[in-house]
Image 1 (tube, rainbow, N blue to C red):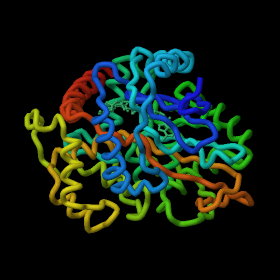
Image 2: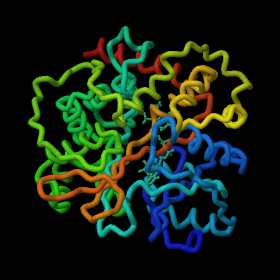
Image 3: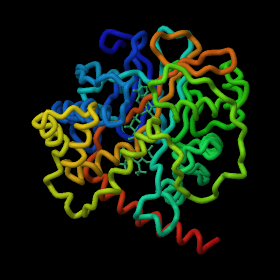
Image 4: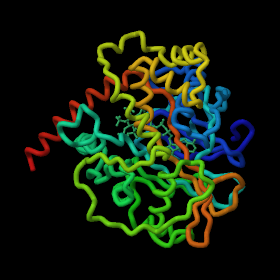
Length: 401
Ligand SMILES: O=P(O)(O)O[C@@H]1[C@@H](OP(=O)(O)O)[C@H](OP(=O)(O)O)[C@H](O)[C@H](OP(=O)(O)O)[C@H]1OP(=O)(O)O
Ligand SMILES: Nc1ncnc2c1ncn2[C@@H]1O[C@H](COP(=O)(O)OP(=O)(O)OP(=O)(O)O)[C@@H](O)[C@H]1O
């Protein structure tokens, strides 16, 4: 069966979308899971506008072209649902309904369909700072939530990954955080080869070593991690980076959640962190999340069009932040706290794409963010409830050990 007249392949899925690549092109379809909610074409148009006009420019997510909506026929959709089943993970198949309107987006798992081999690293970094609501416990949201996940049996052991290490800008701490992700990947670290998942939550350090041998451009894991760090610290504009092998100094690793301030203001990670922090600077009461916010995405787009703001432009960004409803900012921040970083790379030459010089090799890469669709206002009250639950569980856990 073909989609839009072309062959396709399943890439992966999350709680809200199934993503399939359209072979021979540079795009994917983000199929929207429908269970529990009905998606109208208007909802999807608004969502696409939210990504294109708000999230992409605010994050300077330049390698992500404008999303578009596409319609899939009812009969194709019925067949597609059946064909997707064998590829879908057991813990996700309880959601089986898919919307007829899907989102056409840039395929971030490849640098280009013309490259002989494309690899891609996916990092779901989560909240990179200590939110004011958790400061008294000196423990960040991710590290706290690990105990809740353990209790719910969603994970077998807690991860030592701390987002504050990754966002610290300190290369030692960043390396340490990536090693912790690799030791216990959960949904935070994945690797793809030509759009197929080759490293996931079940993989081990040894699996990564074998993948790197096969890749033939990084001699060892530390060099591979240096490559990831160099791209994350880049401004995503500079045409090339010369990789300086960085000697790890694990002594400086923290064993608790400590915020760093080593990120350059032009770096990709800094921009993501700033957007995440939008929920900190605004005071709002969860009780205010009344019916006024049910259709907030379409209101936000209307306001943006009415004020003729272009969020690619710095002064318009500032005007937007100053005038925005605090709850809208908190909802934008929630997207930035849950999105994924995709670093696709290849040793094949690709025009107008930055590269990292690794020894004699040039590794061409694209750094971009995905999963930028708007969240429901219920996300904000869910966060408060989760915080309460995870603090209780953590305190019980501490008493028992
Ligand atoms: O509960 P959170 O905040 O940690 O994040 C949820 C994620 O959990 P995790 O990354 O595993 O901790 C959760 O991820 P998983 O399904 O656990 O992989 C979703 O990303 C969820 O987003 P949405 O509600 O589907 O839009 C996320 O929910 P939102 O809070 O972003 O709505
Ligand atoms: N544009 C893309 N190109 C290639 N692969 C993608 C793209 N977007 C997402 N993916 C892959 O598909 C997976 C699911 O996508 P995404 O995270 O957007 O789904 P979601 O259901 O919205 O996630 P969540 O569970 O965080 O709500 C990602 O983890 C990633 O592996």
